[in-house]
Image: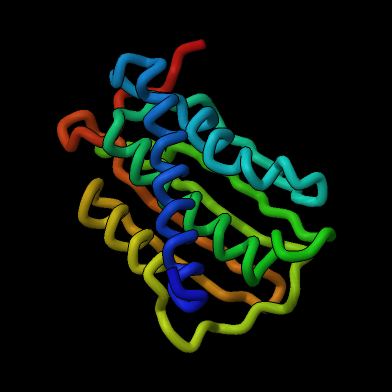
Length: 177
């Protein structure tokens, strides 16, 4: 493999590992669903091994069907990868805050927010990379969600707005534990 192809191969391998980690969670649950927190924990775990990486993760218990869990896992992986290369996870002082809430309505929605802080100043990318396209397409086409990425100087912010209707098949129900 040429030196030029190594980063592409590594990125592909990293995506496979993130997908495999999400599959592990679903397999433990007999592919009936997975807790959102467990999916997020599994995806960010490789970054937590580096003691300088810091995450704050908070939200209510929510059990997702497999398709939604996988789409969110891939989105969080891509965000973490970008943060490790260019954003808050690229410096010891950086932090990523991941929060979510369920908004009620005829179709309840999961609003998941990824916010970076303490990293290098952010500039708007000059091109949309594969990871950004993957996040937008996966959430929009696979589960009918919407994604808003903003590049504030203090840190990148991604807000995912995902329908949770059973009819749409994107989530079961909030856990009752």
